[in-house]
Length: 161
Image (cartoon, rainbow, N blue to C red; front, side, top):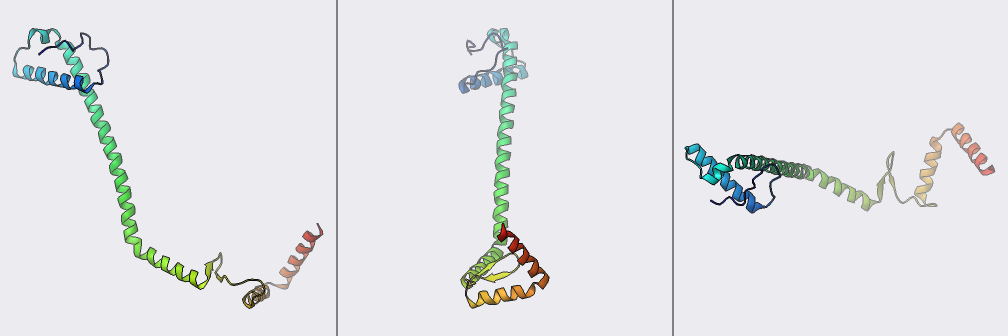
C-alpha cells in the first residue's frame, strides 16, 4: 500500500475530499486490523504510524460529528412530521364539527343574518324600511329619558363647535 498521499504532519485539518477520506478510512481499518491481529506493519506504515493514528482519530471525530448532525436533521424532520400529523388528526377529528358550523354559517348568510357584538341582527335594515323603524323605536324606547336628554345635550354641544 503506497502512502505518498499521507502527510508527514497530522497537525493540519483533514481535506474535505471524499476520495481522500475513503482512502484514509481504508488505511485506518487496515492498520487497526493488523494491530489487533498482532501482525507487523510494513516499514513505511511503521514510520508514519503516529501520523496515521492522529489522522484516524480526526477522521473518526469528524465522522461522529457528521453522524450527530444527520441525527439532528432527522430529529427536526421527525418533529415537523409529527406536528403535521397532529394537525391532520385534529382536523380529521374536528371535521364533522367544522362542517356543521360551515353549513350553519351558509344558512345564516342565505337568510341575511350576520353576527354582531350583542346579538344576531337582520341585514335588511335600510333607512326608511319598516324593520328599521321598528328596530329604532324599540331601541329608543329602552333608553331612559335622562339618557336621551344627555345625548341631546352632547349633540347640541358638538353641533355648536
